[in-house]
Image 1 (tube, rainbow, N blue to C red):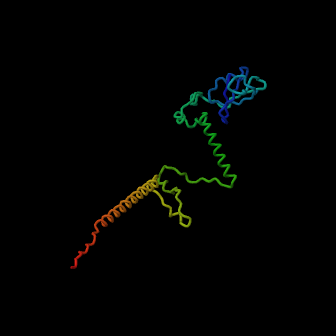
Image 2 (spheres, rainbow, N blue to C red; image 1 turned 135 degrees about the vertical axis):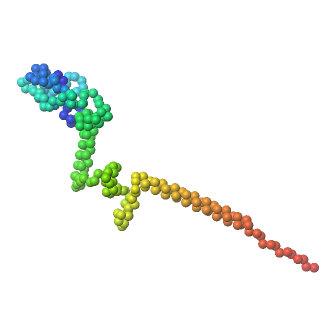
Length: 217
């Protein structure tokens, strides 16, 4: 009998080969996916493809295999086949046993450990601050406001300009840009009109009347 044994520390499993001469072989054969075992055997180089080593439980005198926890098929919703993410969302309490979710959890664990280790070694302390969330329940969103716009050094923090909703800052910048363009355009038009008016005044200036020459006899 072949058992695929995994302790949850990695993606690869250890293949356990159980011989029919074991005293509790009949009990082992009735176990389903998800059951837990405690095995004592001989670790050898695997003759088959797919794994480097395998564990042989073949000698009743020195080897043993024990069922630590049974897993009834009617209450265990994971089978050997691959399950979709939509299905795993329905059984959130069991999805950590799949290869996908367990791999994600191990990556998150290593990232969190490295982050905490980095700051702890440099004298920082880990504290639990209020959770920043987009959900506004019972006025919780009015506790404080997060902003990256800081005032100048001598000014107090209450001088920081606040915004009523997300995107208002960009809208104001867009309005300011539009207003600057309109002001620039208005100045150009005013200057053009002024130049046209000055040119018209020059054309209206009349030449002074010439004096009439009276001949003398």
